[in-house]
Image 1 (cartoon, rainbow, N blue to C red):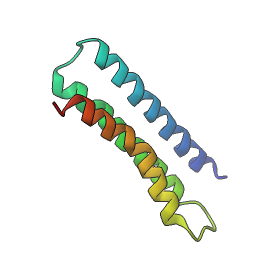
Image 2 (cartoon, rainbow, N blue to C red; image 1 turned 120 degrees about the horizontal axis):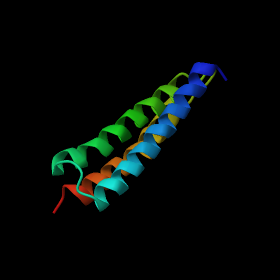
Image 3 (cartoon, one colour; image 1 turned 90 degrees about the vertical axis):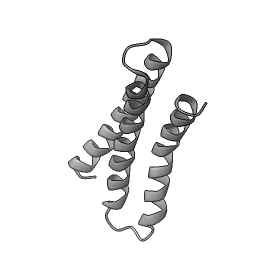
Image 4 (cartoon, rainbow, N blue to C red; image 1 turned 45 degrees about the vertical axis):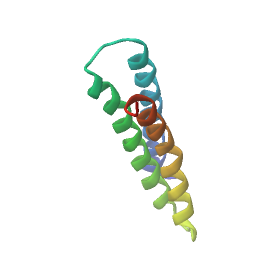
Length: 90
């Protein structure tokens, strides 16, 4: 595996962890305003989804890049939708 692809995968995992940590911290403490506390974890998850999608698309010698890319986007996007439902839907 090429080094830049491996780094891209690790960056995606770091963004997922950062999104989870910020979501937990924002749900327990009032640090920023309400909108920023809702948007920051969602943006981090979207960046992670982009990293995972690029990782899946750039895999060499693959015929089924679309299902892998879709799975990567869904896996990283589901926490963003869950956080949106918890934070913004009353």
